[in-house]
Length: 259
Image: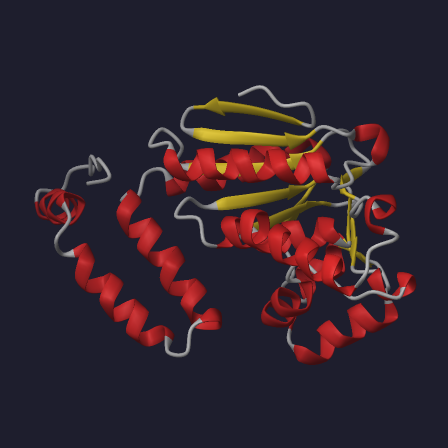
């Protein structure tokens, strides 16, 4: 996979994606979003990919926002289309992926960058990282799911405070309010993300996918319990279920095949 704004590599069934615009603090422009949509689709369709780690180039920024110059003269219709396309092809595509995505936040995660991290299923932040949604300082609001996902993660009051004040918070504060799963040193960031996915890789792939879908339903569906019940039932039809039960009974390690 050759991209202009991304570096992507599969190692031991983990797809590592680096947004490679370090001089621009890895800001999201049209071309970068297009490439992200492509690599996300690749991850979803490729059976060799069991999980994805998404990070930014360098140590300053994960993604320091969107490229404001590209949409500075948009009208309302164009603004809606910008948000709709980005949400459908990138942000929602990550959240709805059957493969777990981990955002390895290696620096500033601001605006669209924090929205990108929140679309991932898990977030790990380097200890020096700063996070925030500063859109109201531009006369905007978050448009890539930020108002929804931040509320789901930290609650209504804290979400309104962070969005309306446009303040940045530290990685430590983000951990305290549940915005990130872990904070580690910069040196340990990818190591920790890989460690988590290596644990996930030992589990039944179809069950992992069903679990992600069911957890998403807790916040995105009218009745997430119905989704959980349906996904639970489907698991009984998989070879992985039979293998898992057999391994448990015979006290051996499971050898899951994703079938």
